[in-house]
Image (cartoon, rainbow, N blue to C red; front, side, top):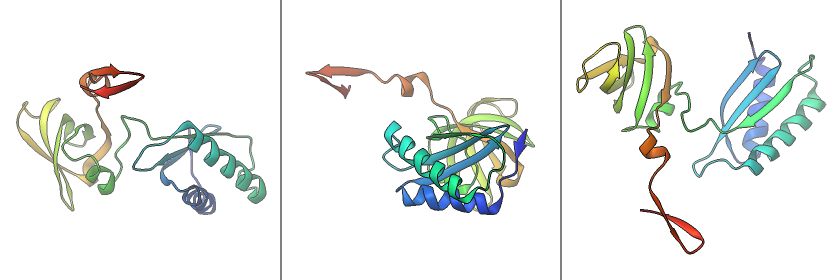
Length: 167
């Protein structure tokens, strides 16, 4: 069961995350777990997550806005991250995405982003033939995320000395 996050709590999370030099990507309070996803262009390290977690814990103790027991998780949004708004889609143009919408489920290449929706070149899914283009309005999207292929995930690398370089 998801809990609603109060505006005061959201503000504290956003201020704290920003003060740590990272961007707030998402906040979710599900059951007793408060998940805070952070991001920055060069990626997120474990040390960054730990530092943000420590800062948030201190702020939460001072502000006392969460009356019940909870567990705090701070992480990156992940490689197959959720896409929730126009800005998220703009950051992944030409990538493969999965979209569940009122008009069906689509997996395809994100071709372009407009003010009202996205154009996808179908690869697979319940609607649309592979190779055809599909326009999906933002208001019709239930869920969307990046899809990472095995090729992207396990790119061929070659060892040079003690380092690996892209092949």
